[in-house]
Image (cartoon, rainbow, N blue to C red; front, side, top):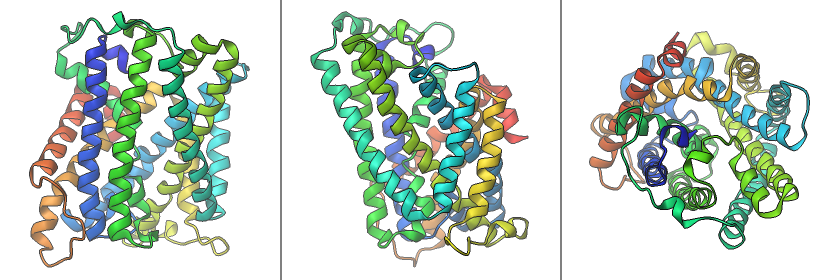
Length: 388
């Protein structure tokens, strides 16, 4: 997706670096907010305290109706595409696999947080090993061409640099997405004030490191123009090194990784309507836990039903941009809430104080609003749909 907007290796790598910086700035904002307000609900909690119940309700409704469910749908769609590459099947098989994966993980997370957490630890280890293997094998055994990096930072056709960069950042930041997910289960941490900021910042730093190197390998092995025509680039890398067997192995590993990502968005997503239900009568029916498993089963089930419908509605690219505008509008609002919280709750303890305040919070908010505006201008259909 990125190489469709940025046709040059220099711009592509710069965009991935910039996306990492934005994610890290966001992690700094969320680290301070989560340490000061260690409650389950993440964005909902911060928006509610900063702007009032109406802002929290608006986020909760948007998350339930679109943002979370579109994220679940897009991740599961990617899972289905890789599965179809591994086991060729009938047309539309990727959507069947996507919906099946959503419901399998929904049932696992209803059965208890410890099952979802255990699964997450296993697949996170698998992701780390997969990325490390891809890096080592790509550099040592891959038959790349250093000339792929020769054309650096030319003028971009089909639009200005800023607009193309903004569109490329949508899939990049979706890929970086997850740096704030643990705030949605903040109330279930043992030491939220210290453990949560540590997890946010170290994870963001590690992911930036891995993604830059992996994308460098892709560009070393394939020209940027060729990458734009490929759907499953990691599988193509391993196929170029080991043939069809390598393609099948890495596809299987990636399936496990995407399965873990899907588990994350489903696990955290069920806590958001649960938190909103504590304050708003409209969501009250979502505010009870399962008597047997003590999990927010109704919120998880509603997410699964609507996400399954979205899988049937759109393609991966449509689902990706469908939620982008609303997501980054709320990210910008949360960034500004750091200023509001410091003024309104001066006496509240702040175990983690963000580095570089106020410039880091201001920069993150500005970029978030820019991405929102750029997406609205160049993807108006998906943006309007997200606010209907």
